[in-house]
Picture 1 (cartoon, rainbow, N blue to C red):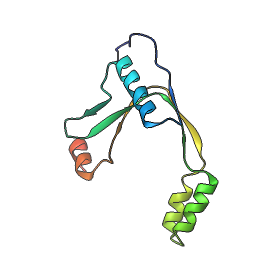
Picture 2 (picture 1 turned 90 degrees about the vertical axis):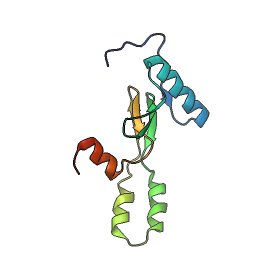
Picture 3 (picture 1 turned 45 degrees about the horizontal axis):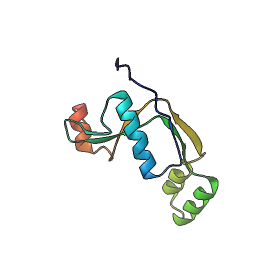
Picture 4 (picture 1 turned 135 degrees about the vertical axis):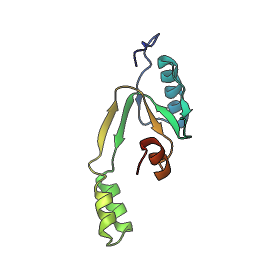
Length: 115
């Protein structure tokens, strides 16, 4: 916040791309905004830089149909799988950090001070 990046703005990452291309996007944006690609916070949570760009989120109708066959008649899982629709484009307009793992209950409590 408050720091103006120098140099030309790197292009946004537009999926699909492979791991090597993803890393190149991360490195270009990290250099541009002056932050590391990866970091660990004070309580040991690991984060990775996600550059601006575009990707598809959610599942197609055929993916949902196939997944529903695998869960039988378990309503909870039907609801979870159906919530993956509709597939849609997501556009990130600026870089963000994303945790590499789910937040544990202990991490949540350390950050928030309560459960």
